[in-house]
Length: 235
Length: 235
DNA sequence: AGCGGCAGATCAGTATACGGAATATAGCGA
DNA sequence: TCGCTATATTCCGTATACTGATCTGCCGCT
Image (spheres, rainbow over the protein chains, first blue to last red):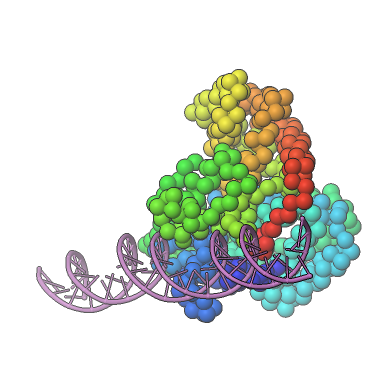
């Protein structure tokens, strides 16, 4: 997943992207190109270009005072899940059909790590293991356009996912759905994978919506009359 | 569809994007940032950033000697259509359900223009009318993420589409499928729209594949030992 | 005549610099 | 003490300059 490539823009982009995947950047922090440039020992331009790319892809938004990670509205979550529902069950089914044994091993390793992290209450480890699991089955999707699109849509949720896993009950239900998908993969049953993934999608949407609702409510309580500027840059 | 916005990057980006949509740029021409900057009366940076954005989105590829429009392989076409099949029938169905009367008017206007252009053998006009038609129903898709994704996947085909419309038989079959979808929209029957769009997708895939196959064969004949460099930039 | 190497040209990548817009802050008056 | 205005700051957008890699074409060698 790490693409060091050779040019600075890609390096910074990959670095930021992986931080976003790990929810390592809070929506409240401001990402400023000069800062990123300084910490990486490069000039503004590569840092800026990486940031703009993330903005174009919808992960960040540009404000007048630095860039910030985009916060999903409830409508965003519903909309994004509508797309995911159309793509992921079908893609996972084709992955189950075409899966090789080494991918099965990766899947097993990821699933073990997920359960291990759940037991040790390691939230960020759980997040990482979760990403591992999805990357494992995505590898078996032969259509690169399909895989890339799915990967992108999944990544939008990383900032919210953290909140999902903090709640123990939700996390356990989430992992339970995941393990059901896992066993369907082991059975190499495309239809079972498809059905369980579909169920999983609906459950996940519910979980994200409720977490986000709570987040928004808490935010409204702590800073009642707070305004945010979003500025131009029509996505 | 035109977003003038206010900053130069967006301006150049929209300009190039609309040119790509009209197949106004041949894959053989090299897009160089300095040239674009000069013609638009701006500096390299905005032009360059617009080009990089198009590269990141997959419309262009970077070479050591300027940027060029990406040519789709047969595998690309199959892969892209697999995604389109998952999204467009469903989205069109929801559009048929939620469509307002003014969107119906737009759809009718676009359909009339399509037939008019077909009769007068105006290929580029046909292309434009076709884009009009799809934009009309996409407006009725309430989920912006869905609409944006579909729009993006459609745009990959503009370079090939030109070839599709050049062949009279294929063009007529294409338009026939379109008019069947149109009448299903008029009937406000989501399921009929969904089914006809599904059929349309398969027919379109066939058409694109055969056109592209012919293109590739012709290219192989005219310049047999021609080599192309694609360079780094791991998408 | 064909082949290999050298020099110039081209163009992407990166760095630095300047201007302007929006925001934050300090100073002033009530 | 509070509100308003002027100044300072921050940071984006754009411009210009430099560097290095790659390609092309020329020239000499065989």
